[in-house]
Image (cartoon, rainbow, N blue to C red; front, side):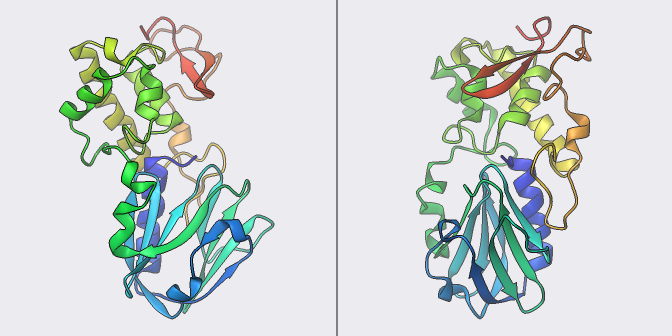
Length: 264
């Protein structure tokens, strides 16, 4: 699933490509992929884009917005080609925006712009790294639960935007065992982990996200963070810190990469 760096990269490209364009038509190829009355967007110009965690928002100049969640396999392509997994085609006065989704879990829906922050999903999101997640808030979140720390930092209602790739890399960078109960981390370790989360997310943004699976940018190019993974996807390979063999196990149903020598 695209995480904060991927979704923010998408937002930035869409902002440049779509701002000022007018929506002429919306062709819905999969009913489950689109919610609301499409007529509210027809003939309307695009004001700009926003992001809440992993949710994209395209604001229109009539008081309505398009909310988009890519889920696991969603893609947004500017002037892209229609394919087998195309679910929605947004025709613009110049070009088009294509929504592809292999597994068809993602969605686009129309809502009033003033009600976006109160959306059922968005309203539950926790504070976001690089935005409003302070060290104090981070420490408070971890101190209140005995759940494994990796599960906590991936919980979107606790901390928004962090997914499996960046959680794995941050925990390795901070030398923290992903299974350790969050409230057992001491102050120094919490500080290291907070800085590590910010570090890996900034790296993800710098490299345009990770295209290890389905993610591509709206211009059709791939991100490059997959070439800079710290531990994610490196099962059986030597740890770049100690040389030990990286192990993989599943935690909360997600693949978790771990160096038994470095992460305590």
